[in-house]
Length: 558
Image (cartoon, rainbow, N blue to C red; front, top):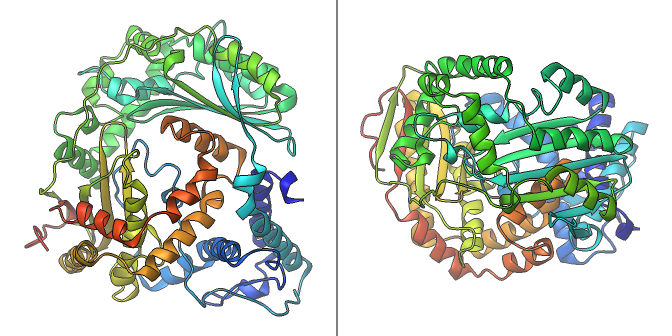
């Protein structure tokens, strides 16, 4: 049975579980914060010990996301994490998940007998049982990723699934806000807001009406390194939807009235940001790390720069970026390969072959700085930037596992245990590996009461120092491997849109269509010595530290 289920089934079961619990209440065996949730007896019997551990970890992750965070937050000061906004942060890893705990031995266990008190509880348990029974096998056995190439040479990865009559497409053109000319910062951002504001013969209103009639959702957005597009459509109306996407991709109008309207919206955000400590801090952070590199610039631009953008600027950027040579496409849903080939040619086949991108240099973030953003706030936010590791580096997975132990695991990381669990200094503390096309970094973020900011920073520095000098334990590494293997499908493959997004990112990283089958092997092959070496390599450097809040006395080095 599991071989015939797709990853979308698993995601929909999880969504259905949440719907039932919202409407009818949580099953009695997981109702109280702190109580250990159960899996039904016998549900794991067909699996090996390793596979059972992965199922239990996935169940633990989901339940603690739903119950643990809210309960634990009640006596702590809630904070906003001010983190580096990555172009692509930890693609294809556990870092995608905002709630990513590993379970500890003995915390989650199997029940000998469960008698649900309500029909809703029984249904919820059934959903969970099926979900976590199939998830460990789905990535390797059930999701058939096909490579499809159209007659005009447009390539895409396709996952066919007819369980729901929906098609999702995700694509990216290389070259994002780094392609904004000097003095025209915000150009790519403005352009992405205009693709559904008129295309071909349709003005803004006519295009929106046609889009609504087609029952489709279309969106575009930019990162530092790419222009992304997405569309979700009903299978029975895919002809109309794909035709609208064709117009948007090939013939955006960039009429003056929509330009002025979207520009005004962006300008209001820029003006508001000038008085927002978070926005001011992130701009200062980017300039400190990247100097005059394009990564130091705001994607939104400035008051002055967006005022200078003309329709000709938008057309020139569109022409430079929208070309087949920089295109990656993924499609998931109710569409067959032959039909998809026709749609690929219709949407992308008439684009020019080669992009005309401005060269962007690689850069190492500048470390060993102390950046202060002085605001009289009741809480202080802290960021620390360390060296990163390139996605294709031999020690990448060693660094990923090290980061998960340091601060990537929401509930079990060392930073979480020392800063929150033992001392209650912050609601959230985390670390992330940031991978972009031209720069990499490891960033630690947290926030705390301003009168305890110096203490918190010192503890963070101590935890980092200890991991750099001593490395993790065998037990920590084993638990982290188990979690990262078991949680991948839950974190990255729980809907048609998320699958399409994941497949696009795998293409960008040139990881190969069979990467999901190979990923567990890469993780399991990492040794403790390799993780210790990664910790020493990345965490021994003097970081750049940013403090957002009242001036922090003696906050340079911990």
